[in-house]
Length: 419
Ligand code: UD1
Image (cartoon, rainbow, N blue to C red):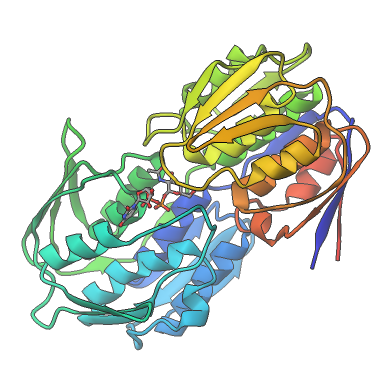
């Protein structure tokens, strides 16, 4: 099992190039099940989850090949399989977004519950109930889901009880080739959902977004592959900004065009950092001790993202004052707290509330990456800590960060991967 060995205390200083968005490329790869011919995807991050999506596409009958400059080519000359085996489903959470496309393309789909980060219960009722409204019969038994729609998928009016990201993606992907029109109210509004919609539109899908964010999808008979460049990864941007902020450094992040940086720069500014946003870059400078943020409540987009919670907690654990977090998206997303406390932080959890009393210093020790963003939080804490931190279970981190140790080393961090 690989580990990261981090000698803390070095300032992050310099310039790095931002990766493409994990949460865009994964649904776009599953959308390639729906598109005939060749799709060329640019700005694809090299991540273990992307390889896992590639293995599912290959299993379903597509050909996928890597090209230079972070491009992937997917050739879809017909889907030959409608079952996704458990070993492929368990590799990542996003395997569930293949359900909509496969049922749409094949009229049948069998798969099991997906793997991914353990953040508490992650039910699929919103996905499955929505597909039922679209004419899909579904049976669930011993963790297996069997779907069939012999008469094809039918457009429907769907109101989501919660703007679930995964359910919005599955419904969109089931609806684009459906018979008739689908009206989807209260969908997720994340930039990565908009990216998926832009890709589908280029392939020939008819999707309108009304002022209240309702999605109107008119089913078409065919989608054709296209060339598309994935948007930059806003959560990776936040992670690298946090690395600079934690170490009192200064960092320019390039290739950020299209990210709404205002949404997260505000938190770094509240902590006392200076942030400058250009057309295609973000610059952050941090000198003094960070200041606490009184209240951070995770909310659906455009609120404070749940994916930023662990990363910000690592930072605020060394800020001056008390910060209070409220995790409203997942029931069990504070698994990183024990590791931060082991490093000297003072964090108490009361149900969905976490109270962080900022300490002056963290100290290196042995910790585990409990999940993807919890693992990123361990890296941020270890960069700021005195002494050496050994982070195990880093396979979680590889799911979402391309070459993270290489990038951080290039701007001054002392971080090495050891197998
Ligand atoms: C969620 C996050 C997304 C993040 C990703 C990985 C939100 C709204 N979604 O997406 O930003 O990138 O995790 O960390 O912030 N739920 C149900 N039934 C369902 C589907 C979801 O009860 O059928 C619940 C979940 O248990 C969870 C919440 O809704 O409490 C959010 O789920 P959803 O947005 O679907 O999760 P992801 O797609 O994994």
